[in-house]
Amino acid sequence: MAVLGIESSAHTFGVGISEKGKILANAKEMYKITDKGMIPSRVAEFHSNNAKAVITDALKSSGLSLGDIEAISYTKGPGLGPCLRVGQLSALTLGEKLSVPVYPVNHAIGHIQITAHLSGIKDPLAIYVSGGNSQILGIADEGLKRYHIYGETLDIGLGNMIDNFARAAKLNPAWGSTVAKVAEGGSYLQMPYTVKGMDFTFTGLLTHAVKSLPHNSLRDVAYSLQETAFSMVAEASERALLLSGKRGAILCGGVAQSKRLREMLGAMSNSHGCGFFVAPDEYNADNGAMIAYVGELMHRHGAKPKNSELGIKQRYRIDEVDLRWL
Ligand code: FE2
Image (cartoon, rainbow, N blue to C red; front, side, top):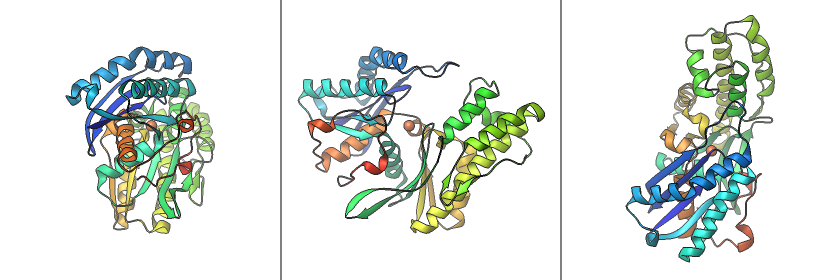
Protein backbone atom coordinates (compact mmCIF):
# COMPACT_ATOMS: atom_id res chain seq x y z
CA MET A 1 0.00 0.00 0.00
CA ALA A 2 1.39 3.34 -1.06
CA VAL A 3 0.96 7.10 -0.73
CA LEU A 4 0.45 9.34 -3.77
CA GLY A 5 1.74 12.93 -3.50
CA ILE A 6 0.86 15.93 -5.68
CA GLU A 7 3.12 18.97 -6.16
CA SER A 8 1.80 22.08 -7.94
CA SER A 9 3.27 25.11 -6.14
CA ALA A 10 4.84 26.71 -9.22
CA HIS A 11 5.56 25.66 -12.83
CA THR A 12 5.64 21.90 -12.22
CA PHE A 13 2.69 19.57 -11.85
CA GLY A 14 4.29 16.52 -10.26
CA VAL A 15 2.91 13.25 -8.96
CA GLY A 16 5.03 10.85 -6.92
CA ILE A 17 4.31 7.54 -5.23
CA SER A 18 6.10 6.40 -2.08
CA GLU A 19 5.89 3.01 -0.41
CA LYS A 20 7.87 2.13 2.74
CA GLY A 21 10.24 5.03 2.00
CA LYS A 22 10.89 3.82 -1.53
CA ILE A 23 10.01 6.12 -4.41
CA LEU A 24 8.04 4.09 -6.96
CA ALA A 25 7.17 6.96 -9.31
CA ASN A 26 8.05 10.59 -9.90
CA ALA A 27 6.08 11.83 -12.91
CA LYS A 28 5.77 15.47 -13.95
CA GLU A 29 4.83 18.01 -16.59
CA MET A 30 6.45 21.42 -16.56
CA TYR A 31 4.96 24.69 -17.80
CA LYS A 32 7.42 26.39 -20.13
CA ILE A 33 8.36 29.81 -18.79
CA THR A 34 8.65 32.56 -21.39
CA ASP A 35 10.48 35.87 -21.07
CA LYS A 36 7.31 37.26 -19.46
CA GLY A 37 7.85 34.98 -16.45
CA MET A 38 4.96 33.00 -14.97
CA ILE A 39 1.35 34.19 -15.08
CA PRO A 40 -0.23 32.20 -12.23
CA SER A 41 -3.64 31.75 -13.88
CA ARG A 42 -2.01 30.40 -17.07
CA VAL A 43 0.15 27.97 -15.09
CA ALA A 44 -2.87 26.83 -13.07
CA GLU A 45 -4.74 26.17 -16.32
CA PHE A 46 -1.76 24.13 -17.54
CA HIS A 47 -1.83 22.10 -14.29
CA SER A 48 -5.59 21.45 -14.61
CA ASN A 49 -5.15 20.28 -18.18
CA ASN A 50 -2.31 17.92 -17.22
CA ALA A 51 -3.37 16.62 -13.79
CA LYS A 52 -5.14 13.49 -14.96
CA ALA A 53 -2.38 12.47 -17.38
CA VAL A 54 0.41 12.93 -14.82
CA ILE A 55 -1.49 10.91 -12.18
CA THR A 56 -2.02 8.14 -14.75
CA ASP A 57 1.63 8.31 -15.73
CA ALA A 58 2.78 7.96 -12.10
CA LEU A 59 0.50 4.98 -11.48
CA LYS A 60 1.69 3.33 -14.67
CA SER A 61 5.39 3.68 -13.84
CA SER A 62 4.84 2.41 -10.28
CA GLY A 63 2.95 -0.64 -11.53
CA LEU A 64 0.14 0.16 -9.07
CA SER A 65 -3.53 0.96 -9.53
CA LEU A 66 -5.68 3.53 -7.70
CA GLY A 67 -6.91 0.75 -5.40
CA ASP A 68 -3.36 0.36 -4.02
CA ILE A 69 -3.23 3.98 -2.81
CA GLU A 70 -3.86 4.26 0.94
CA ALA A 71 -3.41 8.03 1.34
CA ILE A 72 -2.97 11.21 -0.72
CA SER A 73 -0.75 14.18 0.06
CA TYR A 74 -0.41 17.56 -1.64
CA THR A 75 1.61 20.76 -1.38
CA LYS A 76 -0.25 23.21 0.87
CA GLY A 77 2.32 25.98 0.31
CA PRO A 78 4.30 28.11 -0.06
CA GLY A 79 3.59 28.82 -3.70
CA LEU A 80 1.35 30.54 -6.22
CA GLY A 81 -2.29 30.48 -5.07
CA PRO A 82 -4.01 29.39 -8.30
CA CYS A 83 -1.38 26.66 -8.86
CA LEU A 84 -1.56 25.34 -5.29
CA ARG A 85 -5.35 25.24 -5.63
CA VAL A 86 -5.20 22.77 -8.54
CA GLY A 87 -3.07 20.33 -6.55
CA GLN A 88 -5.22 20.68 -3.44
CA LEU A 89 -8.47 20.10 -5.35
CA SER A 90 -6.98 17.12 -7.20
CA ALA A 91 -5.89 15.63 -3.85
CA LEU A 92 -9.25 16.20 -2.15
CA THR A 93 -11.15 14.79 -5.14
CA LEU A 94 -8.96 11.69 -5.25
CA GLY A 95 -9.14 11.28 -1.47
CA GLU A 96 -12.94 11.43 -1.61
CA LYS A 97 -13.14 9.02 -4.53
CA LEU A 98 -10.87 6.45 -2.85
CA SER A 99 -12.09 7.11 0.72
CA VAL A 100 -8.53 7.59 1.96
CA PRO A 101 -7.00 10.31 4.17
CA VAL A 102 -5.44 13.46 2.69
CA TYR A 103 -2.34 15.18 4.14
CA PRO A 104 -1.16 18.78 3.55
CA VAL A 105 2.61 19.12 3.07
CA ASN A 106 4.94 22.12 3.29
CA HIS A 107 6.94 22.32 0.05
CA ALA A 108 10.27 23.09 1.75
CA ILE A 109 9.82 20.19 4.19
CA GLY A 110 9.37 18.00 1.11
CA HIS A 111 12.71 19.02 -0.40
CA ILE A 112 14.53 18.69 2.93
CA GLN A 113 13.03 15.39 4.14
CA ILE A 114 13.52 13.50 0.88
CA THR A 115 17.14 14.69 0.81
CA ALA A 116 17.73 13.85 4.50
CA HIS A 117 16.16 10.41 3.89
CA LEU A 118 18.37 9.64 0.89
CA SER A 119 21.50 11.05 2.61
CA GLY A 120 21.51 8.69 5.56
CA ILE A 121 22.90 11.60 7.64
CA LYS A 122 21.15 11.72 11.02
CA ASP A 123 19.74 15.13 11.94
CA PRO A 124 21.66 17.16 9.32
CA LEU A 125 21.96 20.89 8.83
CA ALA A 126 19.75 21.69 5.82
CA ILE A 127 20.76 24.30 3.26
CA TYR A 128 17.66 24.99 1.18
CA VAL A 129 18.18 27.24 -1.84
CA SER A 130 15.54 27.73 -4.51
CA GLY A 131 14.00 30.51 -6.59
CA GLY A 132 11.93 32.00 -3.82
CA ASN A 133 13.73 30.70 -0.73
CA SER A 134 17.22 30.57 0.73
CA GLN A 135 17.41 29.24 4.26
CA ILE A 136 19.77 27.37 6.56
CA LEU A 137 17.84 25.14 8.95
CA GLY A 138 17.98 22.39 11.50
CA ILE A 139 15.42 20.53 13.59
CA ALA A 140 15.03 21.92 17.08
CA ASP A 141 13.27 19.66 19.56
CA GLU A 142 12.49 21.74 22.59
CA GLY A 143 9.03 20.57 23.57
CA LEU A 144 7.74 21.46 20.12
CA LYS A 145 9.52 19.74 17.28
CA ARG A 146 10.01 22.28 14.49
CA TYR A 147 12.59 23.51 12.00
CA HIS A 148 14.69 26.28 13.41
CA ILE A 149 15.91 28.79 10.82
CA TYR A 150 19.52 29.61 11.62
CA GLY A 151 19.84 32.04 8.76
CA GLU A 152 18.04 33.10 5.61
CA THR A 153 17.93 35.65 2.83
CA LEU A 154 16.66 39.01 4.03
CA ASP A 155 15.47 39.97 0.55
CA ILE A 156 15.12 37.66 -2.47
CA GLY A 157 15.89 33.98 -3.01
CA LEU A 158 19.22 32.94 -4.52
CA GLY A 159 17.54 31.39 -7.58
CA ASN A 160 15.46 34.49 -8.32
CA MET A 161 18.54 36.66 -8.02
CA ILE A 162 20.44 34.57 -10.57
CA ASP A 163 17.42 34.38 -12.91
CA ASN A 164 16.98 38.17 -12.70
CA PHE A 165 20.60 38.63 -13.64
CA ALA A 166 20.21 36.19 -16.54
CA ARG A 167 17.21 38.17 -17.85
CA ALA A 168 19.08 41.49 -17.49
CA ALA A 169 22.02 39.98 -19.40
CA LYS A 170 19.55 38.72 -22.08
CA LEU A 171 20.67 35.11 -21.65
CA ASN A 172 18.54 32.40 -23.20
CA PRO A 173 17.26 30.38 -21.40
CA ALA A 174 17.42 32.93 -18.58
CA TRP A 175 18.27 30.71 -15.64
CA GLY A 176 21.11 29.47 -13.43
CA SER A 177 22.66 26.80 -15.63
CA THR A 178 23.08 29.35 -18.47
CA VAL A 179 24.79 31.79 -16.07
CA ALA A 180 27.09 28.96 -14.89
CA LYS A 181 28.04 28.17 -18.49
CA VAL A 182 28.74 31.81 -19.33
CA ALA A 183 30.79 32.21 -16.12
CA GLU A 184 33.29 29.46 -17.00
CA GLY A 185 36.87 30.72 -16.99
CA GLY A 186 35.91 34.21 -15.76
CA SER A 187 38.07 36.51 -13.62
CA TYR A 188 36.93 37.93 -10.30
CA LEU A 189 35.62 41.50 -10.10
CA GLN A 190 34.94 43.10 -6.72
CA MET A 191 31.23 42.72 -5.80
CA PRO A 192 29.14 43.72 -2.74
CA TYR A 193 29.25 40.90 -0.17
CA THR A 194 26.59 41.03 2.58
CA VAL A 195 26.43 38.47 5.37
CA LYS A 196 24.88 39.51 8.66
CA GLY A 197 25.51 36.73 11.17
CA MET A 198 23.81 33.80 9.44
CA ASP A 199 21.55 35.94 7.24
CA PHE A 200 22.44 37.37 3.86
CA THR A 201 21.06 39.68 1.17
CA PHE A 202 21.29 39.49 -2.62
CA THR A 203 19.70 42.61 -4.11
CA GLY A 204 22.76 44.86 -3.64
CA LEU A 205 24.87 42.26 -5.41
CA LEU A 206 22.33 41.91 -8.23
CA THR A 207 22.07 45.68 -8.80
CA HIS A 208 25.85 46.06 -8.82
CA ALA A 209 26.33 43.13 -11.22
CA VAL A 210 23.69 44.43 -13.67
CA LYS A 211 25.22 47.93 -13.58
CA SER A 212 28.69 46.42 -14.24
CA LEU A 213 27.53 44.68 -17.42
CA PRO A 214 28.15 47.53 -19.91
CA HIS A 215 31.72 48.08 -18.63
CA ASN A 216 32.98 44.49 -18.26
CA SER A 217 32.84 41.18 -20.05
CA LEU A 218 29.68 39.19 -19.37
CA ARG A 219 31.90 36.23 -18.46
CA ASP A 220 33.67 38.10 -15.64
CA VAL A 221 30.47 39.61 -14.26
CA ALA A 222 28.62 36.26 -14.30
CA TYR A 223 31.59 34.54 -12.67
CA SER A 224 31.90 37.19 -9.94
CA LEU A 225 28.18 37.24 -9.22
CA GLN A 226 28.11 33.47 -8.81
CA GLU A 227 31.28 33.27 -6.70
CA THR A 228 30.13 36.09 -4.40
CA ALA A 229 26.58 34.80 -3.87
CA PHE A 230 27.70 31.21 -3.25
CA SER A 231 30.48 32.35 -0.88
CA MET A 232 27.90 34.25 1.15
CA VAL A 233 25.78 31.11 1.50
CA ALA A 234 28.89 29.07 2.36
CA GLU A 235 30.03 31.50 5.07
CA ALA A 236 26.58 31.61 6.71
CA SER A 237 26.27 27.80 6.45
CA GLU A 238 29.67 27.28 8.04
CA ARG A 239 28.67 29.45 10.99
CA ALA A 240 25.38 27.53 11.35
CA LEU A 241 27.13 24.16 11.12
CA LEU A 242 29.56 25.05 13.90
CA LEU A 243 26.94 26.73 16.07
CA SER A 244 24.41 23.90 15.77
CA GLY A 245 26.98 21.15 16.33
CA LYS A 246 25.34 19.09 13.55
CA ARG A 247 27.61 16.43 12.10
CA GLY A 248 26.58 16.74 8.47
CA ALA A 249 24.94 19.03 5.94
CA ILE A 250 22.51 18.46 3.09
CA LEU A 251 21.88 20.82 0.18
CA CYS A 252 18.46 20.90 -1.52
CA GLY A 253 16.10 23.04 -3.63
CA GLY A 254 16.40 24.12 -7.25
CA VAL A 255 19.78 25.88 -6.91
CA ALA A 256 21.26 22.68 -5.37
CA GLN A 257 21.66 21.63 -9.02
CA SER A 258 24.58 24.08 -9.27
CA LYS A 259 27.91 22.24 -9.50
CA ARG A 260 29.89 25.17 -8.15
CA LEU A 261 27.66 25.62 -5.09
CA ARG A 262 27.93 21.88 -4.34
CA GLU A 263 31.69 22.08 -4.63
CA MET A 264 31.95 25.03 -2.20
CA LEU A 265 29.57 23.62 0.42
CA GLY A 266 31.09 20.14 0.15
CA ALA A 267 34.59 21.56 0.76
CA MET A 268 33.29 23.64 3.69
CA SER A 269 31.56 20.66 5.36
CA ASN A 270 34.43 18.29 4.78
CA SER A 271 36.95 20.77 6.23
CA HIS A 272 35.09 20.34 9.55
CA GLY A 273 34.96 16.55 9.26
CA CYS A 274 31.23 16.69 8.47
CA GLY A 275 29.35 14.69 5.86
CA PHE A 276 27.73 16.41 2.90
CA PHE A 277 24.99 15.20 0.58
CA VAL A 278 23.01 16.42 -2.40
CA ALA A 279 20.13 14.36 -3.80
CA PRO A 280 19.82 13.51 -7.51
CA ASP A 281 18.52 16.49 -9.52
CA GLU A 282 15.01 15.05 -9.93
CA TYR A 283 14.46 15.76 -6.20
CA ASN A 284 15.99 19.26 -6.27
CA ALA A 285 13.70 20.34 -9.06
CA ASP A 286 10.06 20.50 -7.90
CA ASN A 287 8.62 17.01 -7.78
CA GLY A 288 5.72 14.96 -6.45
CA ALA A 289 7.90 12.22 -4.93
CA MET A 290 9.03 14.42 -2.05
CA ILE A 291 5.40 15.28 -1.25
CA ALA A 292 4.46 11.59 -1.39
CA TYR A 293 7.37 10.71 0.91
CA VAL A 294 6.39 13.30 3.56
CA GLY A 295 2.74 12.27 3.18
CA GLU A 296 3.79 8.70 3.91
CA LEU A 297 5.65 9.78 7.07
CA MET A 298 2.56 11.68 8.24
CA HIS A 299 0.28 8.75 7.45
CA ARG A 300 2.43 6.13 9.16
CA HIS A 301 3.18 8.24 12.23
CA GLY A 302 -0.39 9.20 12.98
CA ALA A 303 -0.70 12.82 11.82
CA LYS A 304 -4.41 13.70 11.96
CA PRO A 305 -4.98 16.96 10.07
CA LYS A 306 -8.36 18.58 10.66
CA ASN A 307 -10.56 19.41 7.66
CA SER A 308 -9.85 23.10 8.31
CA GLU A 309 -6.14 22.43 7.76
CA LEU A 310 -6.67 20.98 4.28
CA GLY A 311 -6.46 24.30 2.50
CA ILE A 312 -3.66 26.16 0.75
CA LYS A 313 -1.28 28.74 2.22
CA GLN A 314 0.71 30.88 -0.20
CA ARG A 315 3.11 32.04 2.51
CA TYR A 316 3.51 28.84 4.49
CA ARG A 317 6.69 29.18 6.52
CA ILE A 318 8.60 26.04 7.34
CA ASP A 319 9.04 27.00 11.00
CA GLU A 320 5.24 26.91 11.45
CA VAL A 321 5.12 23.18 10.73
CA ASP A 322 4.65 20.81 13.64
CA LEU A 323 7.01 17.86 13.07
CA ARG A 324 5.76 15.45 15.75
CA TRP A 325 4.97 12.91 13.04
CA LEU A 326 8.54 12.88 11.62
FE1 FE2 B 1 10.96 23.67 -4.87
